[in-house]
Structures are given as structure tokens and as C-alpha cells.
Length: 312
Image (cartoon, rainbow, N blue to C red):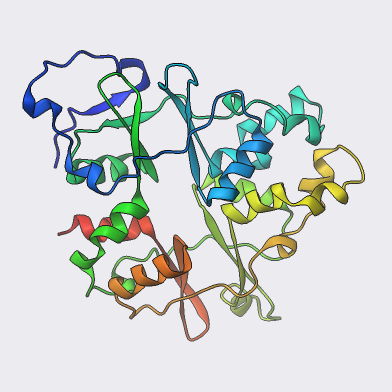
């Protein structure tokens, strides 16, 4: 499980391997990977990239050269959140386009994609893939063949749901994160994006609604996910209601309460991992707040399930 020989960076995917029958054999990771991968060219606009993500319900898209098919990078919902006000990629809006939101979202996606890409060979094992994902905090890994062409993609969700039975009888409280980043419904969208990007969060519970601050910090009112932000970026109403081209009109005036899910799915700490995975699969979600006596006491995600599987 610890052998990392099949890890490739974009810069060395052309390394020559000795051809043997053993080397030609695919690794067991390909049994659960997606082979028919949707990829996009580097010239596609950020706005159109977000549209493709929503159409397919993807959280990431590989970027491939349309001629050679070679992998150039990957763009994730977190890259778009970074662009949307969360991090350094916001400079495209703020500086390059001087706050012109409509111009910035038509920038080619290559400007925000991740180039320094961790990949695995299509000969990799499931165990090796789990190790690499957890060590690098990755939600997905592209799989490439000997020529550096995209052969598939595997996500932490693919592995977690495929192997959940291994840890199926364990309970949520053993793997949940008790440290929960939260915010309030009046938080501007830009500030929420910053919280999520800086802390590597794909979802953030929204709390409040109590006069007693100590109780308000635990009472769940909703949840904001990275997908909610991407959906908002695609909403026709967003463009219909713009008073100007300024990004500040979108990012500062839009409050979390405008786009958050107001009836979030929650689980109790005693739920089994097996039941949790069934819930994730049924509802097509990747994480939920853990609630006890109406208080948020933790959050559990697909990555936590991956850690549960690794123990076995």
C-alpha cells in the first residue's frame, strides 16, 4: 500500500517503462474508476466550465489538450470558489478586470486550473490510491496511461462507497471531525468563499437564530456547499438582477441566506458508517453535519469514510 512508484507529476508522465505483460496489466483501481471521463479544453471559459460542472453534477473537471488528449491540469469547485472571492485567483476579477465580473467569468479556465497535478498510473492499486489521496488531501486523482493520456478518474467518493462495507458497522462519532467551521446567514458570499477556501472546506454549516450566543453557535439553520456557489454562478436570475458589471455587487450584496440549503440533511453520532454511505449514495451528497440534541457537534465527509476504510 505504501509503494508510490506509479505516482506521476505532469512534468514526468512521459517516463519510459519497460514493457512486460505485468506492466501492461491495469491496476485494480480501474475496477472502480470512471473510464469515460468528461474533460474540457483549456480555452473553455470559467462560466461555461461551471455550467458543465452543474450539468453533470461534477466537483472537478480534467483539462486535456484537444489534439493529443494529454492531461494539462484539473479545475475543481474549490478553484472556482477561490476565483469567486476566496483566494489569490480572485485577483483575476479584482486586478486584471478591475472588478468587472461579467468580463472575468469569460476568462479561459486555464487561468484558474491546477497545473501542478498529482496523478496515478492506470496500473495503480486501490490501496496505493487511498494512501496518495489521504497524504495529499485530494478529492480525486486522474489516472493516466504510459503516454500521459487520461485513462480514467477516481474520486474519494468512488472508493468510500465501494469499500464502505469494510467499516460498515463502525459509527459516525468515531470518524467525524468535532472541529466545525460555521458562519451565520448574514455573511456575504465573498466572506463565506474565503472561509471555505482558506480552510479547504467544501461545505459549511450555517448557524444562529438564538438570542443566547452560546446556543446560537450550535443551532443549525442551513448549509452552504461549494456546489451551491457554482449553481448560483450559473443562475439566470444572477445575470438578470445585476445592477452593474461590478463583482462587488455580486459578492458583497449576496448573503449566504440567499443561496444556502435551508433544510440540510443531518445525522446522529450513533449512525453506522454503512448507513451513512447509503445516505450519501441516495442523496448524492458528500458530507453532513452531525447533530445531537439539536446541536451541531461535528461534521463527517467522504474523506472521513476513506480514513475509516484505511484502518482495515
